[in-house]
Length: 66
Image (cartoon, rainbow, N blue to C red):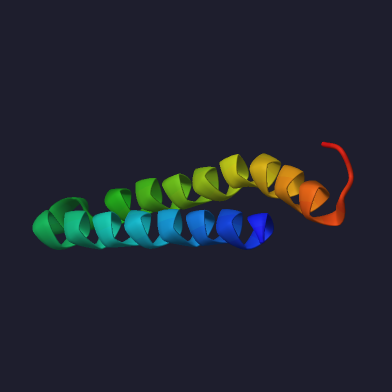
């Protein structure tokens, strides 16, 4: 169950980053390419920061001390 919650947070973070990136690119078309690259970096960072908590949650779900 904890793993599902962590996955939910990662997916929610990716969706928020995508929405903010899309809105920024829409609002400032001259910087669209740079905005999308920054958004991609934010999405990669969201995934990278979610790996540790996800691993701990999986260990707890399996009954292993994390």
